[in-house]
Structures are given as structure tokens and as C-alpha cells.
Image 1 (cartoon, one colour):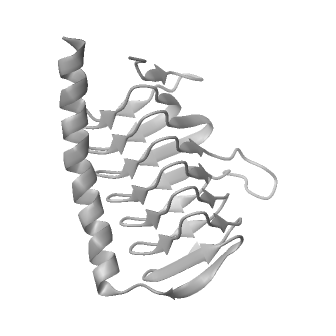
Image 2 (spheres, one colour):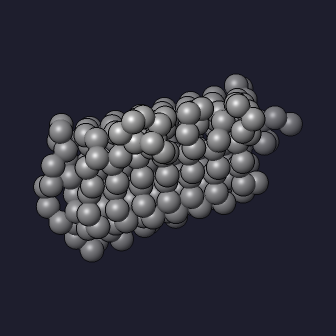
Length: 185
């Protein structure tokens, strides 16, 4: 079993809440903070070497996702950190770069979210979409495509389903954490 790599960089050590689940094979580097009951699934890379990354409570980052941030430039003197709020669902094989996902945002499988983008709470980026720099998905909207564009408003059952997904991942992470601890004995 490949243990997660938790690597300090430039004097910044990742801060991971004790209740968070970090799966084997993950690499977490630099100025990263991960909140309570968050889950970082198998083989994710979270690299905060040029800015910071924050992942809120109960958010899940699913298998194979890469998260980075953007350094300062003349156009963006503070760069673009990556900020993921509470209760966020991030699907498998996602690329997040210098973006903000507000509380309860949903990012589908194999999507790309680029610098300066914001996905508001209770908004969804559909599987396979590419959200180009500095776009904002408003609350309650579904965007899809490459480049992503507005498709329709989300229904209340769809939003409720996203919230159920968060609860499922919190419980599933606890089960995986227990299975890994049992396998180490």
C-alpha cells in the first residue's frame, strides 16, 4: 500500500484535520489546508507550491484529481489560489487550477476549471466540461460543454441529490479509513 506523501514546501506544511480521509497514493504539497471530514481519494495530487489551496469541511476530492494554484503575475498580483468551500463534490479525474468552488458546488467527472473561475453554491459543472478562465457559474445553474456554457437551471431534486452525495462521501470515507487501518495491522 502506497502511503500518502505529505510534503512541506517553502516553509509551509500541509494542515490536515484529524477527521479527514487521505487515501493511499495521494500527494499533498505545501500551503494546503484540509477541513474536518473532508476526503481526498486515491491518487490525487494537491500541490500548493506557488500559492495556497484550501479545502473545506465535508468536501470530497475524488480519485485522480489534480489541484494546483496560480502564482502572481502583473495582471493578477495575488495570483489565484484554489479555494474549495464546505460540502463540495469534485468528481473523478478533475483538473482545478486557481479556481474557487463555493460551499455546495458540484464539479463533474473529468472537468477542467481554470484560473479565476468561480462556481457558486448549488451550481454544477457537467462531466467533461472545460470552464475557461474567469468564468462564473451562478447559484442554481448547470453549465456544460467545451468551452462550458449555461445549459439550464437545476431542479430542487438535483440540488437535494448533490447534498445527499456529500453525506454519502463522508460516510464512505470513514469506511475506507477503517479498512485501511485494519489492513495495516
